[in-house]
Image (cartoon, rainbow, N blue to C red; front, side, top):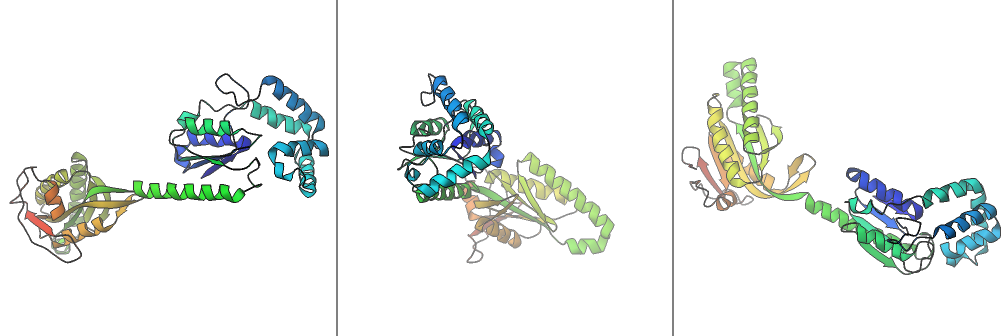
Length: 349
């Protein structure tokens, strides 16, 4: 998560727009996209006001009465707090001289990310206190209005500094926002797919009969054929499992036709495979998949015989009207959905 407050808000916005793959979420608090007044952005300062501010900034930097005047819009709740005044006066003097302060303010004066806002495409939360006199709430609204899908929350208070006033309200909103982002990401990591498991039948016996080197050659031919067939039918290889594959398809009919074609093709290599298919909601875990649908797919595959394609009743129902025909194999196990099976000899498409 990227958090930008005050003058760092535009930098956070620019980073999120440039590197969305590295930005899980963006939070902007008490900031504006530009500093100088413009016809399309009246919340900024005029050139005259900014010039006068910079001149006074350089001339009176670090003076106690100037720091007190600085705190009046930044943190009204601290204006009469002597300890806070001493702390901020010391901070002004120790963090940089007048030249440094003016250089930073000049950099901010030249910052304008208004044209960048529409390019932000990450979850965004914009927070602003209603009576903030340092950065007006209109600036926060402008940011939220120009970032697609951004959430704007207006908070009570007049302290600009996030750690003064009701800072718990800010933390609460950020926590709520990040929780919602995580929930949305979890939903995006789930989807409907047809899960396919394959397994070579009798591989141990074949190894013993033809020898290790010859069998490795058969396996290599098998793997190349399966991968080429997956590409043709737009299947996605997830991983290899011993002598078989786990793959997913976005359409059950295409998955069944892939299974029939592949079973026939590998038989030409002298290899028999069993294939099981099930359609259901899966969870994406990096490059892997998991969930009950995956477990059912594995269960279906384990029940298939050599050269046989078994599918769950869910798959059969979803491909109705496709021209594929099935032979009922009944129900198998209380933990799996009812399974309907077919051998390649009786399926037609």
